[in-house]
Amino acid sequence: MSKQSIKHADDDNPEWSDADFARAVPFSGLPLTLQAKLRGRPKSAETKERITIRLSRDVVERFRATGDGWQTRMDAALKDWLVTHPKGV
Image (cartoon, rainbow, N blue to C red; front, side, top):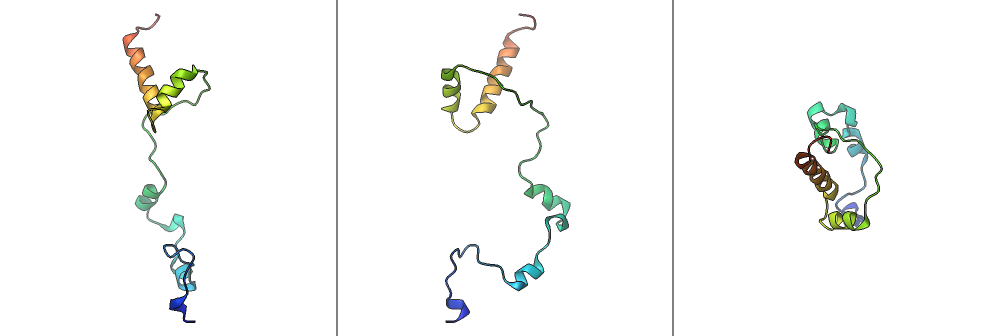
């Protein structure tokens, strides 16, 4: 059987050859601009604080039902509440 007729278990990600390993570069060896793009989402300018809070089940279910990003929308709703309610009230 020739090497070309061998079917890989994952054709989109074939097993590396010795030549592939020889060309490989460690992550730290990549240009910094490329490293920044590959590290995941960028750091937010606005930092958030992780807390534990107990909320009514119906409130959480309604926000979760809106899909991905529901926690961000809940944060926005609370910020809106702060705008409409002056300090000390």
